[in-house]
Amino acid sequence: MATKKKVAYFYDSEIGGVYYGQNHPMKPHRIRLAHSLILHYGLHSLMQVYRPQLASADAMKAFHADDYINFLQNVTPDNMEDFEQQLKRFNVGEDCPVFTGLYRYCQAYVGGSIGGAVKLNYGNADVVVNWAGGLHHAKKNEASGFCYVNDIVLAILELLKYHQRVLYVDIDIHHGDGVEEAFLTTDRVMTVSFHKFGGDFFPGTGDLVNRGKGRGEYYALNAPLKDGMTDEAYEFLFRPVMARVMEAYRPEAIVFQSGADSLAGDRLGAFNLTLRGHAACQTFMRSFGLPMLVLGGGGYKISNVARCWAYETGTILGVDMADTLPENEYREYFGPDYRLHIAPRDRLENQNSLPYLESIKQQLLQNLSRLPGAPSVAFHERAPDTQVNTVKDEDAGDRHSNGSRHSQRPQLWPHEREQGAMDY
Image (cartoon, rainbow, N blue to C red; front, side, top):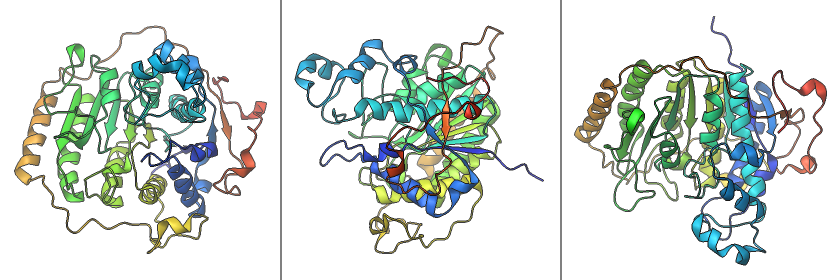
C-alpha cells in the first residue's frame, strides 16, 4: 500500500492585505481567496499548516545584491523622492511599484519558500506548498514583472545544500527568466519553462534556442508556445518532455512554479487551460515521488487563481473536491455559477498546430540527448542551513481568511522547534 505523503502548507494572512495600487493587475488578495477555499473544503486538516518566519536581509542576500536588498528595506511611499536614482537603477516604479509594507511582503513570501526548502531537506515533509511564492522574474539586482525578491532561486539554493541536482518546472504563461538567468551556467539546476513567446509578450525571453551556457548548456529548456493552448495540446508536449527530463537528469528534488495565468480567461494570459489540465502537469511531476516544493506565481483573474490553487492543494492531498463551492466569506467573487471548475473559452483558437508542437518536442528531446549524464558533486563541507524556524498554525481551521486573529505574531515555544532549525 502506498505511503501517504506528508504535506506542509505555508500561509501568512497579512499577504492578502498587500495592495500594489489602483488598476495594478497583481492582487495578493487572491491568496486570501485561495486560503478561504482551502479552509472551507477542509483541506487544512490534512496538512501541517505553518505561518512562515519572515526572511532576513542576509537570507535574501544569498542571491540578491546587498545594495538592492538595502534599498527594499528602506524605500517607502513617503520617502521615494530620496531614492530617485535607485528607483531607476533597480527597475522599481510602474510595474513594480513602491507600496506600503513592500519589504515585509517580500520577507513573508520568501520566508515560506525558504522554510519549505528546509522542511524538504530535513524530510519533515514530502510536498510543501507556498502559494504566495513563485515570483520568478526578479533578478539579482532589480525588480521585474511584479516580482521583487526571487524566492524560487533562494529556495533552490537551500535545496542544493542537500541535493546534488534540482529540477525547476515553470507553467506560468510568462517565461521564468529570473530563475533561468540565475542558474544559466550550472548543471546542478535544470530549468524547464513552458510559456507564451512572440511579439512583445513579456518578458520577451525563452526562445527554443536558449538552452544555457558553459557548464549549463542544455540544462535550460524552453518551450515557446502560442495563444490558445488547450489541455490536450499541453499534455501532448509536457508529458513526453518531462518524462525524458526525469530519465536524463535524475533530479533529487523538484521545484514547481504553478502560475495560474495560463488558465482560460486570465486578464494577462492567452492560453485556454482548465483547472484539470493545469493540475495534471503538477500531478505528473509528483508521480515520480521526489521531494517537491510547489509555488504560486502569476494569475490575474483572482477568482480563478483561488479556484486553481485550492484545487491543486486538493490534488496534492488526493481529495476529490465537489464542484459546488462551499459557503465562504468571499462568495461574491465566484458568481454567477459558484462552481470550482472553469470552462475553456469557446472562441479562442489554438494557434499551436500539431506539427508546431511536434517540432518543439523533438528539439527539446534532441537537446536532452546531448546531456553528458546526470551531474554529481564531489564531497565537500555542506554550507550552513539558512537560519529558519516555522510556527505551526494550530488554529488554522478556526481562523477567518482575513487573519484577524493574527494581529500579533505568535510566540514560538521550544517544543515547536524542529531538529536542526534555527530562528532567522
